Each structure stands twice: as C-alpha cells, then as structure tokens.
Length: 67
Image 1 (cartoon, rainbow, N blue to C red):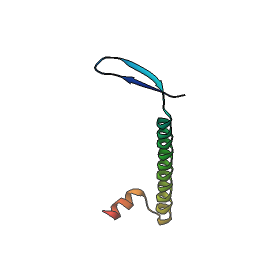
Image 2 (cartoon, rainbow, N blue to C red):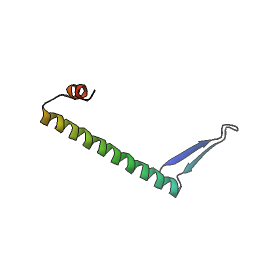
Image 3 (cartoon, helix red, strand yellow):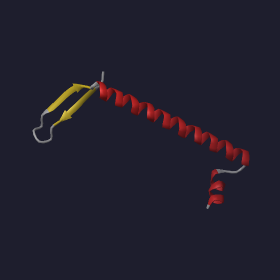
C-alpha cells in the first residue's frame, strides 16, 4: 500500500498516511496515461525508422531534406 508523507513547513509536523481512494485512482490514471504515451512514442519511432528504411535514407539525410 502506498503512503503519503506530508510535512508542514511552518511547524515541522510530519504526517504519514495511506493514499485516499481518489489519490489511488489519480495515480492509476497517471500510470495508464504514461504507459499509453510511451507506447505511442515507441510506435511512432518504429514507423519513422521503417519509413526511412523504405526510402533508403538516414535520419540525418531526412533532416537535411526538411530544412
């Protein structure tokens, strides 16, 4: 189970507590969103590499063409 550590900067009081249901849901959504974004980035990277391979050019050559 995940814990949250809160420290009051004015008093120095520290509190350790379990995540609330809403915080757990937010964390799960953030993890899911991050995994989806990572998968999308990897897919785009693979597509780009495949296109460059089909064209028979390097990434540096493609950059020169797009300038």
